[in-house]
Amino acid sequence: MKSVNCATYEGLDAKVVHVESTLTKGLPSFSIVGMASTAISEARERVKSALLSNEFSFPPKRITINLAPSDVKKEGSQFDLSIALLIALDYLEDDLSEWFVFGELGLDGAVKENIQLYPLMLSLANQKLVSKVIVPHASLSKLSKIPNIEFYGVKTLQEAIDLLKNQTTISPSINAGEIDYPFYEINSEKYYYIKEYEDDFVDVKGQEIAKRSAIIAAAGFHNIIFEGSPGCGKSMIAKRLRYILPPLKNDEILDIAKLEALDFKEPAFRPSRSFRSPHHSSTLASVFGGGSHKAQIGEVGLSHRGILFFDELPHFSKGVLEALREPMEDGKIRISRVNSKVEYPAEFLFVGAMNPCPCGNLLDESRECRCSELEIQRYKNRLSDPFLDRVDINITMQNVNVDDCSSYSSKEMHKMVVQAHIFSKERGQDNFNAKLNDKEIEKFCILETQAKAVLDMAINRFSLSFRSIKKVQKVGRTIADLDSSELIQKKHILEALSYRRR
Image (cartoon, rainbow, N blue to C red; front, top):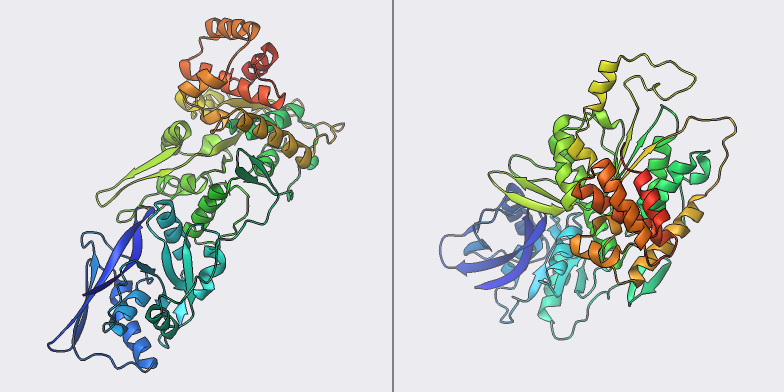
């Protein structure tokens, strides 16, 4: 019996599959066992054709391919090459069990690329399960970004056979590549960023308070809701926010590329955070993920390390808004189905935009609101207090004025965010301020005497919940970072309190 390794998805992570083969005497047959999907079962015809096209005589034996463990369902066409190699090299005495082999075969023996190969490889690398891999040559440029793995690229089945025949003399096709973007280094860790701003804050006229809050939200990854009349710039600010977010580490860039591949997009490997904006008519499954047989990733999971933007916030279904409370608080999504239970990370910056009333004119000085008090109250009640309590910053947008002019550009705002990011990292802080736990709040969110007195007064006067108190401290920490202040001062707490929901 011979074996090589491959992998399949178990939820959102890769599961190692041992591909085993036996060729025994008996009536000629070819079977694949081990809960193989239709795509894998069809590999028999592709493997036969590939072998015969490369002048291999198909052995007149009873061929059995086993995919272990047998209690895990296997899916994907990446098993073709490993199955073909085991049949072609049955006579080889060398041990192949340390090799991972991925590739879909054409009928002529060509090894084809599979877009799902990258997230599989990244998951295996994160779990430290793989070191030597045979992959399609076309995938090398993408896979080169994954460190600590030896990749051997092949274009045809014959190249793969020759490679395994000469294991002792071959060398990897590529070494781990570097990300070619500007970066700065803190404590031996590189943080990459982009200096391009496709949508610039210079286009936003006026709205100085909203732009100031956008800087704070970006620097600390604080959830934020913009409320204002139609056309005042809520969506403009939300769409420009992604370009001023903090830089990314190498492993974070790889994680985002993995999500792009899971979303059936070509991974870009750019230090650019994701921006997901589902429509308010989206279903619960499309937003959070799910499925009857296989738990697919949803918009919340795809927004990991980026922005999740809900425009027309009160028009989202009650079920979606209430289910959003868990990932906003814990940074995780759990999907439970009969066939699978999956947990995946979902640390995102939530941005919401809403009108003050159904017609949108409640705060407009030049237009009359057509809504009754009952309609306005019903509209506001679509957002529950527990949901709103998870929002750090609430901003009421101003009316558009003819005298409004530009102030900050995205480049200037990004520079402020980067300086605050460097200041927090040099303090020894790993998480964004919005994601600090209780111990980290106690360690990093130190208030000066006057600031503590102001916070105590606010707690008594506004009956702040424990969550609200912590959020005020964390927003105050971010404002202090923007001022490069070690202590949270009175002015920082006062500004943080001004962003609380009234």
